[in-house]
Length: 341
Image (cartoon, rainbow, N blue to C red; front, side):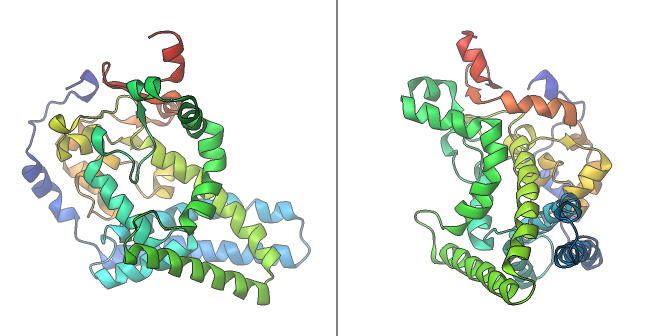
């Protein structure tokens, strides 16, 4: 184990760790409803205020200043959607499905399609032979060296920060999520279709009420800003130093969950906005824990506290970590290849 992951607590088995965290799996209806109240209601209130400014002659900047807080709340909406995909927000599976579909519609993300890919991500995280579903495209140094010109170019474009975080939200939420993946099941295909129809219904409703232009000038900036920060959070959950990737013969779920998932220690306000998802190693160890119980679980589990936190400042260095070097067992930059490192 690397020095960065050194710990003093005895190394529990996965069964023991699961038993230690199991009591946090039970959803609290009171806390779930409270989170809906402090997230969805202010989001709708901001939306109403933005419509008012648009339809009463206020300058557009008066509307745009509310985009950032609305986007912050939409990130929390997505975290609740994410919990629903893990059937962890409510005890009732049906309630999770209904809320997941509704919040998926608000975030332009199909519940069934995204949820299936995300669950596969959990079962394959940091497995070098099972990359490509529900994760950030990551090539090894050897793969990159042996790739042709166009594949290298495509990879460099995708890993470019301006493309990933600037154009990425447009591609993911406005284009990619409108289509099911090749080989999708009927459930996945239907979730994409129904989400698209629901979004179309919202557009039609907007056209006959507040006006289509008003809707687009409000929702598109909110969706885009939430997407920028959402993709960053998703990226830094597994793309950081020192993360780990493992060949199949050395991979196991517990090790990958803890040492390939970041403990992103954010300021309290950002932790609230991101629904504790920065405690990602805790989430991967037990995905059935609702987001509002992750901090309590961490506080009660000494072994999980031994993972060295990733600070906000240090996380920014992750932007230049582009390739997995199997020899060094770490992420490296494109620049390190040019230097012959």
